[in-house]
Structure formats: C-alpha cells, structure tokens
Image (tube, rainbow, N blue to C red; front, side):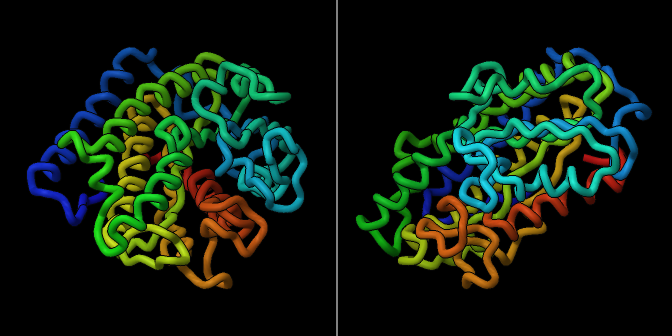
Length: 310
C-alpha cells in the first residue's frame, strides 16, 4: 500500500484522506461480496507465450495510444504500437482484438462510442486473456488536469488545486476514486460472466509526475505543492485498482513502479509520459511510444510470472 505524504493541508484533512482510503478498500470488499465466485481456476485459459491465445484488450486512451504512430482507428485514437499490440505480437498463435478507445469510461464497456461498439461485446467464452485499463476518465482525469493548471496562477508556490478539491474538508478526488471502484468491479464481473475461463489483468496507470514530489513548472503548469498532491492522487487510483482486482478474482499489473523516473517532467530523451505540450507523438499527459512499450513490459512480466500474486 502506498503511503500518503500529502503536504500543505491541515492535519484534519489528512486524517480524512486516510479515512477515505479505508472506505475505498471497503468499497472493493462490498463489490466483491456481490460478485459470483471466480469461474476460472488455476488451470485453463491463455497466458504468457502459450499457443492458441484469444486476447481482448479493453481500456481508455492510456491503452489506445492516441497520436502514437501508426494510428489505425481515428474514432478511438488507437495505435498499433500501444501496449496491447506489443503484448499480442509476443504471444504465439494469438487471435487479437483491441477495442480500447480514447475517452472511454466504464460506461463504454456497455455502450457504443462513435463507431466503436460496446467494448464488452469483444469478450466471449473462448477469450483466454483480457486486459482492462479503465477508471481514469470516470474520476475526471482530463478536467482535473485542466483545473489544476488553471488554478496554479493563483498561488504558484502553494497548493491551490489541493485546496480547491479539499474545500469541503473532504478530498473530492479521493471520493471520486472511491466511487469509481464499484464501477470497475462491475466491469470485471461482466468479463467473468462472458469469459469464465479467461485470465483477467487489471492494468494500472503509469507515473505521470516526479515520484519525489518535485515540480517542473512552467513546463508542467501546476503549483509547486500540488505536484505531490496530484502524485498521491494517482497512487490512490492505482491502489483502488489493485484492491478491486484482488477482490474480483483478477490480477493487477503495476505500471507505476516501472515508469518512475520517466514522468512528464523529465527531458524529452528520458520521458515516457508527454507533458501538456508534447514533443513526441502522443496526447498531452499521456504515454508516448516508449511509455506504451514500458507498460507492455509490465504486462508481459505478469503473464510470464504466472497467476501467483496481485
């Protein structure tokens, strides 16, 4: 479990943040108690390097890879060099279906998104491997980035973004993550229903900002003390995904750890996440081709290390 090292807020607010982390875990447990027992056991299904795999990738823009060459679906900003495509290329005799789509929320698992049908329609009883990376848009990732960038001018060395989301005395981003947990759990339950023998991997989000809490304004236009706040928000999101995966009979793939040191504050040659004004082909605040390759490596490591952990 990641430690909360928020700065700039009163101690009472920090205690409430911890309380909501506990509530977040409770949400995952409640969601799990409503889910049927896992239909797949230790055997069956596809896996790392096995033959005859049927692999389906579900997810949002962190999965689809917007603007990364070569774009193969304009509606969903999907690249053939995103992490599912890289993983699929390493699997033997794979039948691969990538239905990830930029802007997707958990609702798009059941609802069409432009020309992209409901993502869950791609999952069937013969699916062996399903990766799921979803939840960031449910908690309002895009609007959070925009709000924090705009507020930074009010107090460049302070934490105006944190104060904005903590104005009620309860951190609203932690609340949003807790509310997203049951939605992700419902997606996993639906995957189990459609693919009872599949191996399901919940893919976390990479490290967007310096893990040491330092900032890099104006390149990334956040106030100085909002950098650690937003970093910790990303860690809370990943913690929720880890818990929901565990309690819904799926495996969690950590992409945060492998991408530390390659955040959007790093020089162009070192970064795997592009800043708000990208210098490599990628969407703002999204992985570039190196970032997608790093996430593919994390997924592949989980596949080849078996089902033994979360």
